[in-house]
Length: 360
Image (cartoon, rainbow, N blue to C red; front, side, top):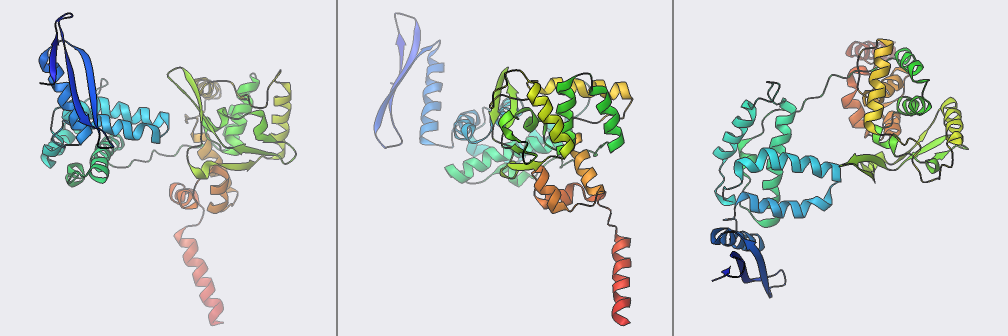
């Protein structure tokens, strides 16, 4: 029997052999269980994970999934995934056997998520519902792809919710200029927003900038990392996508402003952050400027949209804009299609003119 009573402590422990990944017998010992049943359940769970018997509970496979995935994604991405898994998925499926979860179970879970009311009385958004289902489906896909589970019941059930692009709010150049006036009383705020608006970089990219990222001979700034604060700890990680690694040409006036600003920072080392503030600080400053200038509300990220809008208005192509902001050109075309000036009527008129020239 692999479960035993520790008579001196009055607790139970599990002691048994299992085959490791090399096919060799290895001994496992774990103490401190309050009951025989708890020790036995732990032993069964451990063996199920090691042998990948899909008669295991859902929550046991989640431990395998977490171990496989945690090191493969950014910390912030993983924390979002883990929160969804722990709060929205495990409570419903944890004791169900992996190989016995049916499509009807997925549909019942979907209905529960769709009908759920938050503290404010509102249901989850369609976009969030889609995110929840995608995460559940990703867990089953992982089991199918790497551990030979026969099928993904979440895929068979179909998705819930839908992709939802927020209405794009942007500021005109004049609106940004008014906002910028309110930032003049704080140099760090003024220059931070100047970088966001005139370069179209992401907030995390701006907060990660160091002195050595600027080349004032060429008036460029290199975007090669991003900043985030998680659990009270600062992290500098790689940019959002491979395309996000880029060199952005600054307009001359901005390069001059940034050079003066950086020169004034006392004892700034080349590898130290130029904007040593948090995302919440920038967001508070954004709200302050909006209130003072009585501007319509936009998010900090919408300054990036505002930059793209400005470039479109100036006549730049989707390809040129994509290179500047670190997108694929097709993303620019799709996301900002409504801002491009060319309309169906213009196309038809030009084709008509072209045809007349051919006939003549």
